Length: 197
Ligand code: S3P
Image (cartoon, rainbow, N blue to C red; front, side, top):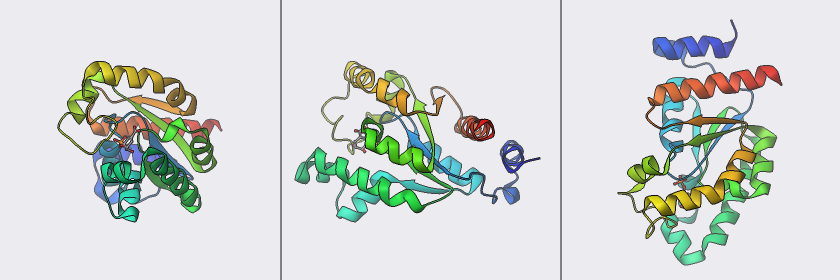
C-alpha cells in the first residue's frame, strides 16, 4: 500500500499515530473565492495529516506589520498583489506544504506559473449564498467590505471563474460538506493526479 492510500485509511480511522507521514512530493496550493473554505480546509489538512500550512495573508500581514485592510488602505491593492507574487516566488524552495492562497492569487498568470512549478493547484468552490454566510460578519476583506450581497459576490465570482478554472488541477466543492470529507477528496484527487503523471 502506498503512503497516500495508507493516509486515506488513517483519515477514515482517525488513528492519530499514523498521521505523521508526509504524503506529497510537491506542495498543495488551495485557491478559490473568499470564503470558499481555504483556511478551514488548510487547518484540517494540518490536523489530519500533520502537514505544514502557509497562510499567505497571514505572512503578508506579519511582514508588513499591519492587517490586510490596512495594507490596502495605506499602499493600495497593486502593492498587495506584488507582495503575493513575491511570496509565491519565495515559497519555491518549500516542499510538502499546504499553501492557503488569498482569493485573488489565481488571477495573475505569473502566480499560476509559480504554483505549477512546485505543486498541485486545488480549487475550492462554494455558492454565493454559502460565501455570503461565511463572510458576512468579518471585516478583513477590503474587496467585500461594502459589498456583502449575494449579487455582488456572484458577479465577482463569475468574473473570476475562468481564471480559477484555468489554473486548477483539481476542483472540490465545499458546500454542505464535512471538512474531513473535503480533505479526503483533496488527498484522493492529488494522489490520482500524481499517479497519472
Ligand atoms: C482577496 C482575498 C483575501 C485577501 C484579500 C484579497 C481577493 O483572502 O487576500 O482581501 O482578492 O479575493 P481570502 O480569500 O483568504 O479571504
